Structures are given as structure tokens and as C-alpha cells.
Length: 79
Image (cartoon, rainbow, N blue to C red; front, side, top):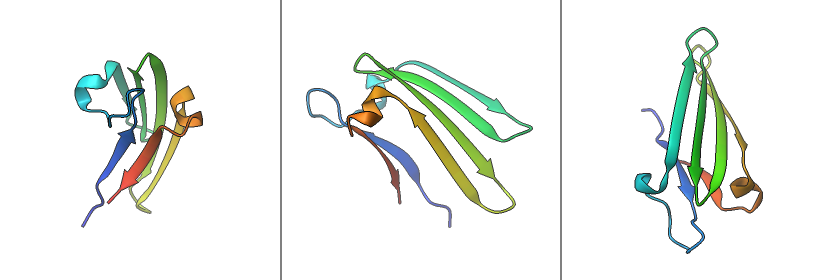
């Protein structure tokens, strides 16, 4: 069974985001390296995410660059 991975982002008004709150979504996948680059805006703040997958070892690494992260308003949820 694979895990379910997603974001929990608290908005300025205290709500947890919905997909409708995300703006200017852009994703690119490097098929050779397995790196997924994602960029989106939420509450006027840019969020940049780099996700790396290793299929042989079943490893996921995530790097997030955003003011939203430094304020503790974004969490990676793994179920």
C-alpha cells in the first residue's frame, strides 16, 4: 500500500486551504532525474517545491522554499 501525501496550509484567515486557493500553479517533471518542480502562490506568497523520487529504494525527498514555511503555516501530511 502506498502512502497518501499532501499539503495542509493554513491561510491568513485561519482556514485550511482548498485547491481553489492556489494561484499560478506550474509543475515540471525531469523524467531523467525524477525531480518534480512545483510552484504556486497562496495568500499572496510564492511557494516553490522540489520533490525527488527514487523508485528503486522507495524514497521521497521534498524541499520547500517559501515565507509560508518559515511562518509555520504549511505542513506535509503523510497518511
